[in-house]
Image (cartoon, rainbow over all chains, first blue to last red; front, side, top):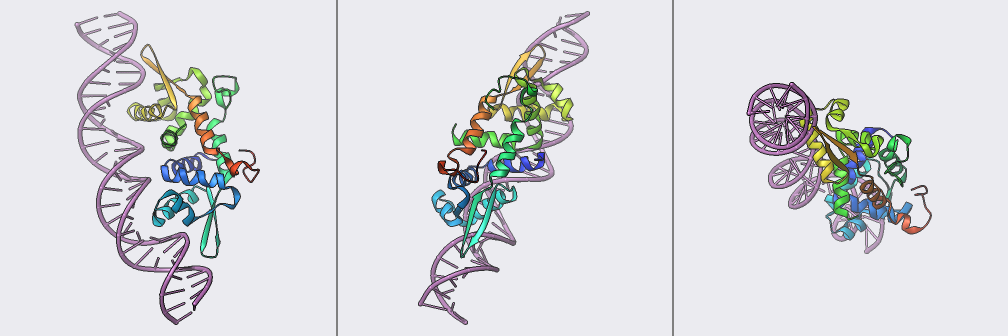
Length: 102
Length: 102
DNA sequence: CTGTCATTTTAATAATTGTTTAATAATTGA
DNA sequence: TCAATTATTAAACAATTATTAAAATGACAG
């Protein structure tokens, strides 16, 4: 994963509403949740949610699929994995250190 | 780790220079690196670096210690661990899913 | 002390981001 | 087709963030 994509993913998650959206989608797994369901659960207006979905989608952190009138969003675990790996790469230059557990 | 701290940590890392700083500090381990050394390595002005150090410190992602005229910064692995755990908590509601590997 | 080096702070400006309101699409059922 | 529902887009404004230049702090050597 390249630096510029990691920055984009971090930016996308670095906002309270979007972090909450993402966490709900992590819990809901591959099936995901409908846009309106998320909006209601978080008490955020649909328009505002839509902007946040766009930001998260653009960072490839979430996926969407249409089902009738509903749009279901779900977490893209592959990108999250890549981001986490990037953050801890080459920890302590390969030697054991205070980073134990990473 | 609380949501508000996670957002702060993500915000701190969601910037190319700060992400680069953090990664260099992850590699350099507990000893860390001097402020000026990092500035030179990244080609960023000392004043600008200082602002970024402040942001990262305020998010508790890095630690600092003074040694003579030099200030050494190092990665705070505990906070990174907390952040990573927060992001993947309750994945797929505890059931096996597409999140395999997280 | 005085001068120099390493870093931080302050102040100013430019750029980005988040929220709101209103308008627009797409889908469904009567 | 018409109205209702679900979601997105566009435009505007307020708020936050990043960068720069200049001044200030703190540490050490002579």
